Length: 294
Length: 156
Image (cartoon, rainbow over all chains, first blue to last red; front, side):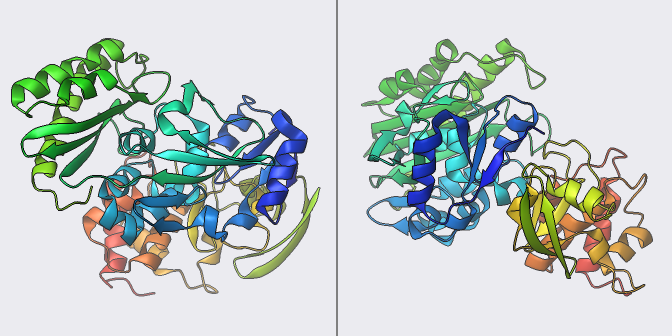
């Protein structure tokens, strides 16, 4: 293991001051399931490790709060989100998606903010959060700003986050009535593995017309991938099998997967189309029976 | 170096440790609690599972400094004197282990499950235990062992 100095501030202000002081020499430690692995492999070698453990009960960083939509503190663990009655009721898509992540042991430690900052394109939560139009509130010593999640992922393990910034909250806006969602994780191997391909879809209907569509994939490119071409092809259309089939076919041109033991490039591209079609179909079915929840 | 104070299997422990010490190394090398095994070292295999304030964690991914002030339970903490924990007894009675290297992690994960949900269904056991790998592939017997405890079939 590399050497570093571990510090554990008592307040958010102290965390932000330390990030301001040390910049790229510092990394923030939440659950550690991503960062400690990167440090063991010497891919990341911070001189200072800023532990967030003392902020675990901060209302802003650790609570799930209902408003017109929902805000989720960045220090909420995957397990907290998966088992939250509020999330299960208001955003069952997220409860389902987070339940698909790794194992109970990892979900207990890994945090929402940590996983987003980690920006591994194979993760499950980003596609689901992308179709929900999630925004991130990030803070630094100088103030705060909001980043659309669709603008956040820059490249493989790279984000729009500046070295002195910390993700504090994830904001999920309210969804219209008659909205349906789906998250499908295609896993030919074990359930705790990353996906061969993962797809999240959201469809809002007005009568039998799609008035809003969102589609995003995981394990499909260097970043979690929102596919606007599919969204555009669906918008304004009736969700017939032909329309869904034609729209899903468009992802083949958009994905850029890596070949690995979970599948070849060609296989992943084919499965991206198949699972996109299924995800849209499921979202449409759910939207038709929706009671206003997604 | 950092001073830490924690409780391990009910015993108070105070140590000065290097900042980069992993919990598994503190347990195995610092406290001679070698029941906890290191397998993959990347949080996938579950062999190093211990309970941190009652929650299952990969001790290979946990910095020991972040256990400061916490209660850590390892496989050694399950016996009461010479009396085995029902899960330990069940893994023996129902053949829940073969080579044995994954067993401490399996039992600690199972303990976390039964602490939270004393009567899980078979599906719930399988879903919870999927993060603990057994290279001997003795999964059926592991599930049976846990099910036996959940069903109250094991007395110690």
